[in-house]
Amino acid sequence: MRFRGGHNVLLKGRPDSAIKVMPEPKVLYMPLRSERFTFSDILVKDGQKVSGGDILAKDPDNYEVPLLAPRAGTVRLEAVENHIVIEDVAQLEERADIAEEEMLHIEKEMGAGGIKRYKLLSLGAWQFFYDAFTGQLPDPLGTPQAIVVSTLSLEPFLARGDVQLHRRLLNFTRGLEQLQSLLEYQPIYLGMPNIRSEFANLIRNQIRGYAWVKMLEKPLVYPYDDFALLARRLELRSSNGPVWAVRTEGVLAADRALTETKPCTVRILSIGGTGVSQPTHLKAIPGYPIRRIRDQYVFEPSARVLNGGIFTGKILPEETLGIDVECRGITVLPEPEEREFLGFIRPGWDRDSYSSSFLSAMRNDFRERLTTALRGEGRPCVACNYCEEVCPAGIMPYLIHKYLYANLIEEAEQARIDLCVECGLCSYVCPSKIDLRTQFVEAKDLIAKEKEEIRQEQLRQEEARKREEEARKQAEENVE
Ligand code: SF4
Ligand code: SF4
Image (cartoon, rainbow, N blue to C red; front, side):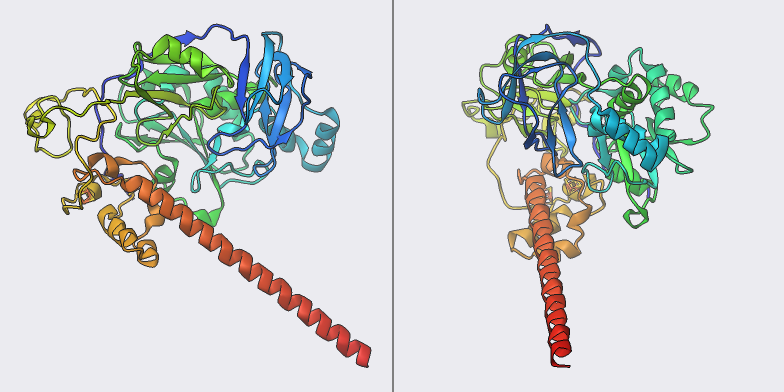
């Protein structure tokens, strides 16, 4: 499969390549939920003193992935709903909260490879790993058919791989070696931009001697950094086992956990968008107060704050007070309160659009100042086909939209809604303002839930059938 579709949007508010270190906080607000995790198994008590690196809670549904204390301090459990608050924060030496007894047991059962996997999980590095096909956390004890590493983030405005790698190229290559030591013969595919930039050349030179790393050059077009697309491009099939997928920060975390046996509690995230005074990168820890970041960087009084990028980020709820463990960037867009006066007759010299209906089509490429304004109401599909042109998954979004609109779920499945990688490009280019992505995400969730219910029902019926069979046999034996 070749790369198809995709589209690059040029927007103002791109973070620069500097990394600003946020001042040390006095209080941390650790959200108990993030995109994939729910840390419901709380392991600390109210008032307990913790050190940096201690395990505060675990997610029982995700291989017990831990929520680590990024700093020393005193735990408060009841202070803010759905958060663990750490007060009197102090930046003392972090420690690896790993149980020696469990290590010995794992070494006996699984050898040195088992210990490495245990360290990745308990030191917070495993949180950076994804199953390329599902986007979920992979089984740390499983064996992948391959690892896909992506050095790029193409969605505006997530933390950039080149910034995260700044002065850490050696850590990156050491991290790759650590990942390779978890495998037997399976390859590591390194997704790189197909450009001759200094950064790309540096990495190419650095890994030249690694026969087990295979380069996958890809165009700098959104969303070719998507793991499912990369796996499809490599013709890896889910029937042959999981594919682990990890970005630059994950390779660096693997190096920290396995080479230095240190907890991975620092993140480099972006703050970008047209509502930000100085779009840049921040070095911050989970739990860092969002209010302090807003006060320093957000100048728009009325702004939509997203946890993530413009296409796939989610609105950050007011009640979330701290950075969560999966945050890769904060995007801020101005939220206009008033409707543009006679906006519908403006020729659109300053409006970028996939179609060429605005005067801007006569300009050279320019960066648009994007806001959350839709510039008009939603309308029915006009069959312009733009959504199909940009769709990287090779499906027909307008057709699936029509099926879903008519509640024809089976037909939507036959049109391969499952291949949608939820990139959001179709919503972006749609001149009728149809939020196709949201519709597809909801439909996929619904289909997955229905399939799970059917599976559970089949299991129940199978168990009931077995019980009946056993009871019948027992009855027959009693008669005899
Ligand atoms: S969100 Fe799905 S349907 Fe829309 S462009 Fe992306 S992959 Fe295609
Ligand atoms: S881009 Fe929008 S209007 Fe055009 S075909 Fe797709 S859904 Fe219809």
